[in-house]
Amino acid sequence: MTERHRTGTVRFFKAEKGWGAIASPHVPRGCDVWVHFSAIDGEGFRVLTDGDRVEFRYEQARQDSFRYRATWVRKL
Image (cartoon, rainbow, N blue to C red; front, side, top):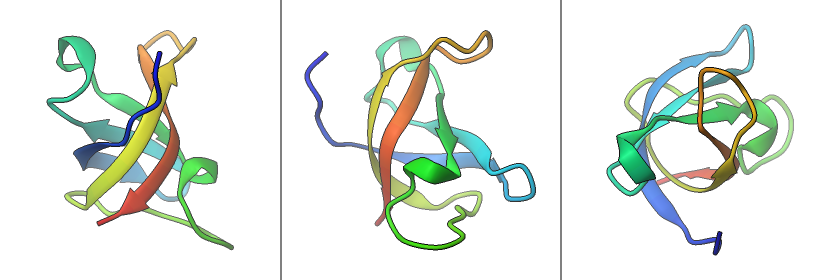
């Protein structure tokens, strides 16, 4: 897959667990994209807030409940 920057909205983010989901019309089949805090651009403890607009890159995931995972995320 060619890496392109997509935009979306944080659907939810569990700060205590360090992961959440991004909704975007730019992802195949309208699937949510799984996001881990380590993929968020920045240093130190990084979190997202429900409803944040973000720019991201993604790839296919191997998790059971998500088809795609974010590889880089930046708040807009």
